[in-house]
Length: 68
Image (cartoon, rainbow, N blue to C red; front, side, top):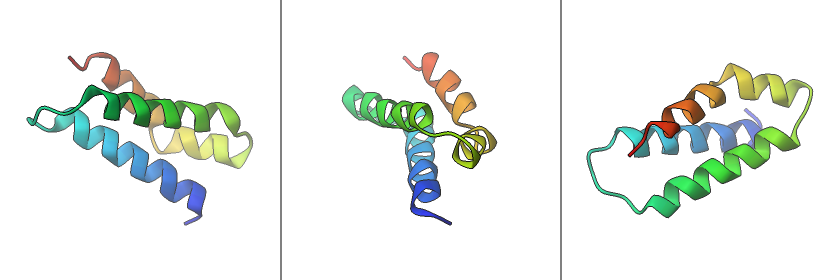
């Protein structure tokens, strides 16, 4: 797994844990993780863009919209 793939996977896991934990978190952490993930998704093309779609970045992002 490349550094790119590991980075995206870690960000996705962090966001999913953040959204599913019953612990109160600092909202800025979620905002920063989503911003980095969005920047990565907008900055890549080719196989990396396909990887973004394959690992479910869009679904994770959509779940974050319903987070209170």
